[in-house]
Length: 329
Image 1 (tube, one colour):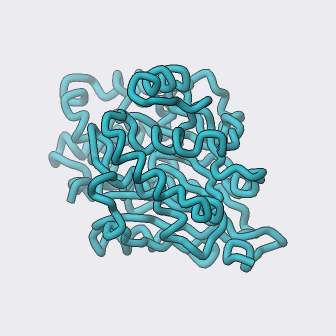
Image 2 (cartoon, rainbow, N blue to C red):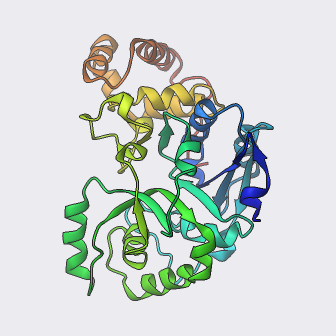
């Protein structure tokens, strides 16, 4: 019996989670982890691993400090495993996007791991997702919101395209099968041979694992742009794309991100960052108008508008909010 199943609570295996983060995403990751803690079952163990290349020691302490006895957080340095010829950065994508492919190798003691992007917020217990049987599939994932466009794009750059296209921001992985079929090696070879993909890690997973994917319920990976999805039908909110709630004041459904973030040490730096990033908006608008626009758009509730007002006053009087620091440090 593997480590995944050896330690159980109330008859259920521990939930094994993995994230991949760099310095820029370490603060938003705090909110993601907090959302898992808030929605998790008190009767179950959630073990969280953060894969990284060069996070500072103080950042590692901050992330691991979010954990507790029921939900331990462990940061693992994996930069030495990066294949320089295959794992290339591009656009706003960094090399950390490939770390999800390393999970079965980095965590050899586990047969099953749930990978989540740092810009996800859990609205229900991820244990339910982790318990989903894969039925022989190597991956469980949700169809990408722009599936048709992605398949058309891939058909222009690859000799063959997958039957369907998933979003790789939420991946339920059968790590044992991934290792047995040497899928990491296949993914790396595919990356070396195909350098023109616009979403390298995601395109690779879709192509290499084609026919080995179980499609999960859409509620487990709902993009922020999908304003048609009712809140009670969302289990995992995904702030995909280069637009994020921490760099825009008027961002749809950002309240759920800030609700989790405010309970973590990342709240001060994050709120300061969004304020400084949008300083021109605040300096050229009445804060009341900004608040009303946020409220009308549904991006923030009244509590968070009041938080914005407080930050705005600090900015006007002192130049920046308390706890401000550069996200890139």
